[in-house]
Length: 299
Image (cartoon, rainbow, N blue to C red; front, side):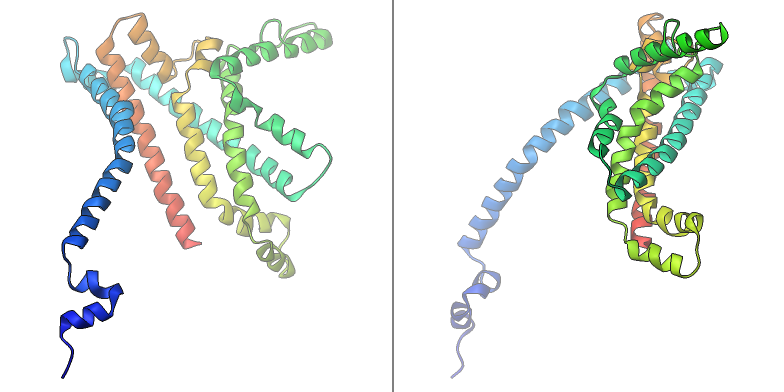
């Protein structure tokens, strides 16, 4: 006689729960559901308190005032706001490009070479991570302000002081300064994972140094460079402390938002500008994640 299905399930304890679910299986599922709920509770609380609630409040404020949600139309058709948006995008794009070039050169050099003082040099390059935007702006003033080091040297050499801390050049320098550490660490981590055999194979086939860089190293670093560039761009788009400290008179969007909120009491326009700035930055990060993922899977 053949054994019954129940006796077969009993003879195989590992399949018993799957084949003959009972009260024990239901209790396990309830306990697992409670455990997952407890694990998800902190994430849900943080998402609600630090994202959903403030962003929702910001969207509601963007409809405040006499214009209501026409504030968005006013923002998108006012030349001063459009100029601020264009300046911010241009500044952030330029800072991202220069930062990537400096970080790739520096990162490759630091990973591929061991020399006395290497750790100290890396610490100095990453030091701006500890500084706020206000401190970075103050350092630019100390470097290229009216009493700065550059002005003192040029005055001694030529009799005239070179002052650019309060101009677009000073703002650009400050943004690059605090952007380099955020990018160079990502570049160094990606460089350490590159397969040196591919470079040796390219050289054995007659490729020179520039061709190895163009055809082997940069494609290998592409996902990391896209991600690092997106982080750099997003940080530059929202940077406020450096622009506020330098007071360069350049209408970057964070300064426009600050002036609308504090000087003009135009809360609706300030909120609408903030929503547009956040949406644009989020879109750049989302595109970068997609491109970086495609680059990694393609490699």
